[in-house]
Amino acid sequence: MKITLEHILGQELEVVLRGDTESKEARQVLATLNHASSFGKLVLQDEDESFLVDPGDIRYFESSGGRTYAVTKEGRFEIREKLYELAAALNSKGFIQINKSTVVNINYVRSIAAEFSGNYSARMKDSDETLTISRKYFQTFKEFVRR
Image (cartoon, rainbow, N blue to C red; front, side, top):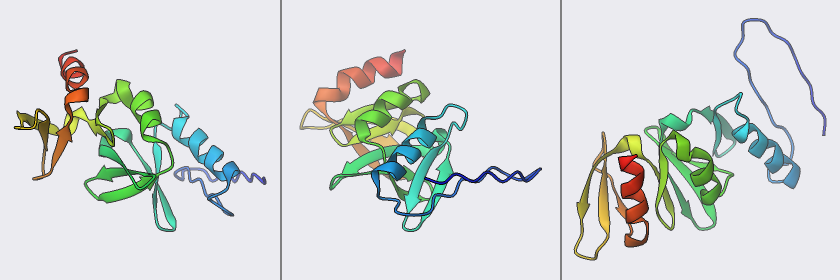
């Protein structure tokens, strides 16, 4: 791996990863960037472009087809981390797992309502979107909200 540092005074820090971005080495670099406390950002992927995003700007994470996605007001972006890693790392920032495939930012939940199935619906702020809180995760969700 080749690392090049270029000092440009007064310019925003930019990280560019060139090469096989699907390699194990590239994934380790992205994971390190995502978890580095000095950055405080997550790396989201959209086709050939990567974005650094504050965790607070993410409404929720979802897992589908073996991939994990972050949903923001701008759209749905792939993220390299696993859902359980995100749930653990971002719990202190207001994120809680609400079903097998979803971790929600509690700051974007407007209301919850019981469903006939025993599950609950979480209605999101600033959209008509609703997410399912499964029975298995509801008690933990309720305790998380009350803390």
